[in-house]
Image (cartoon, rainbow, N blue to C red):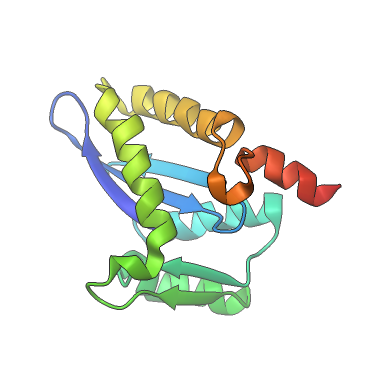
Length: 153
């Protein structure tokens, strides 16, 4: 998981929490708001856990939203290891950095967001397309959802 910054058409700041499953390459969430904090991170992780179960490990950087007490308590309570990248080494979490580059190139840089709600709609459409129609070489040219479906059968 990681954060990305962008803005609305009027210059208002946006913060986006991106979460990707490194095994299935599925984008599990893009949460956006004007301000996002560790409480928001924990809320999103809780929603994902209800649908998919808990991971054993989550890779993230050392941002205060990930390394603070609230996220640490959530991880400890749920027996999830937070694997922090080394300061100044984004390659330690290359999956999310690669995803964020694609997200910026294919979604954020292609749209003017007129409001927070407009951004939510456009970003969710992109996330759905990313998961359902975009094949990945690492998944033998399957989409993330096709790969997940094959895992279940």
